[in-house]
Length: 263
Image (cartoon, rainbow, N blue to C red; front, top):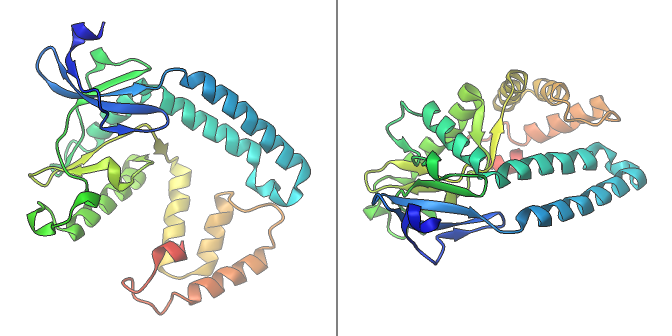
């Protein structure tokens, strides 16, 4: 019973999404916590929606040859696996603890403590972390970190996660980061994570080398090695397209470059 665990639960959620919603609460021990609660009836709705998606994917593969390289069936199955992992809040608890271990040596980063004894597949109980979202800042003079510091730290966290730990936060939008009054960056919401195999990491490194050196051949080889190109691809035409694209950026400084367009 909730009353045996929680002294109080705030009725109005801090956040709400399609899978779960989050409420502040206090344990009977007095600890301030946040609880993430899965929506009731969610599994049935997901099963029905995925069945519809599988039918649509099969229809596309069977009737539209031009879209075969997108692999609609495989896309739906990957989505299904990701969703199943997100729906089990015990998996998120494990993700938080693994990420906390990976960054235990980083004083500038903090993750919430997980109360494993008060978790199950539909409930995640974790430490309440106070802080502000960068998207809510109107006056940076009162903020504990400069925007450039936050951007650098965020980039460092992502690169270290991918290339050192091969385990990363796969939903790093601004709402999932808080900055505490002492400047510590608090990471939230680990329902969606990614894993990078050693071979995929090597492909990513090759891609990055090709990108920063504006070498079309390295880029094309990295994309082909990663299996990201359809079997019908004309490789010579593709390499020519890549050369034309990177030549547009080769003379620009990093400051002038629109990385979103380049990627």
